[in-house]
Amino acid sequence: MDRRKRIALVTGATRGLGLAIVEELAGLNHHVLLTGRDVEKGCAEAGTFQRKGFDVRFLELDVCDERSAENLALVIRDQYGALDVIVNNAAVCLEEWSSSALTDCLEVNLFGAVRTVSCLGQLLGEDACILNVSSGDGESVWFSTAVRERFERVQSTNALLDMLRELAEKADALRPQEVVHGEQPTYKVSKFALNCYTRLLHNDLNESGIRVLSVCPGDVRTRMNPSASRSPSDAAKAVAELVVGGPSTYQSGGFFRDREIISW
Ligand SMILES: NC(=O)c1ccc[n+]([C@@H]2O[C@H](COP(=O)([O-])OP(=O)(O)OC[C@H]3O[C@@H](n4cnc5c(N)ncnc54)[C@H](OP(=O)(O)O)[C@@H]3O)[C@@H](O)[C@H]2O)c1
Image (cartoon, rainbow, N blue to C red; front, side, top):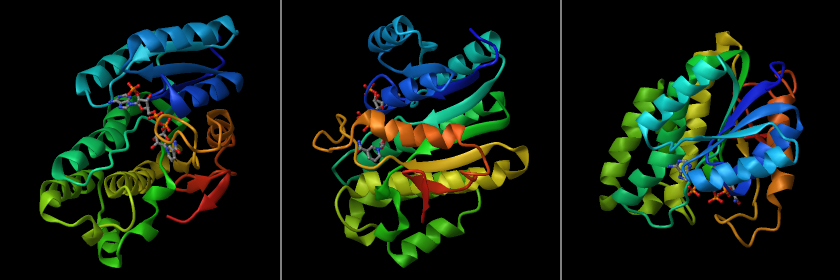
């Protein structure tokens, strides 16, 4: 590996947008750790990139499995010593509203990102970047003022996680409209929570020089959204630009879509 290259890790990267982000970052001179839980597919995709001359390696990571994240941290520390970029991309979109669906969706979309950062964050240097792949479905406009204000009052990641565990426990007894408007309420809660995490982590890391951003990739044609018109590679260009664009253009604590800051 070329030691001058920045090292970027992408979660949930064995297909869809994550795979396209890997290609984009590798094309922008990063050594990219393509991670995911499908080992066979991940190795095959990394092999294809290597044959094209890209500096990409597959490493296993199930973001729901603490031990998987801890093992990955050990491998990266031993073999690289540091990490420059984490792209929290892994997600599921569950249609149903129920306690178990909300628990499962939060487990990947929020707790997975928190777990990844808590295990790997110690490897990040001072000009590193954590990019949370969120969604327009996570914008606060979908939520009532009361719910929004409850989330906004939260001062720490632990308090946020506790509040969401409590909400998931109560979800069977709630109508989704009591929490969030429109379709895919479970997914919306998970992405709104991810955006809250971005802001809390930004506050925690503000002095460290590590940037923390949320990005909405738009509607992208993947297994999650097969009828969308935007290609993964087009969306990945706008996502990767936030990583390479630097802090004066893409400030920490911001939520971006197509290179523009958008409101939470
Ligand atoms: N597509 C859109 O229109 C759209 C719009 C807004 C935001 N987004 C966001 O963009 C990101 C990428 O989504 P996509 O459209 O590419 O969806 P996708 O095709 O469904 O891909 C999701 C990825 O997440 C992985 N994943 C799920 N659970 C995981 C776990 N426990 N550990 C590790 N990886 C896991 C999947 O791996 P497996 O193959 O192992 O399941 C897959 O690689 C997501 O954060 C999504 O919310 C997408």
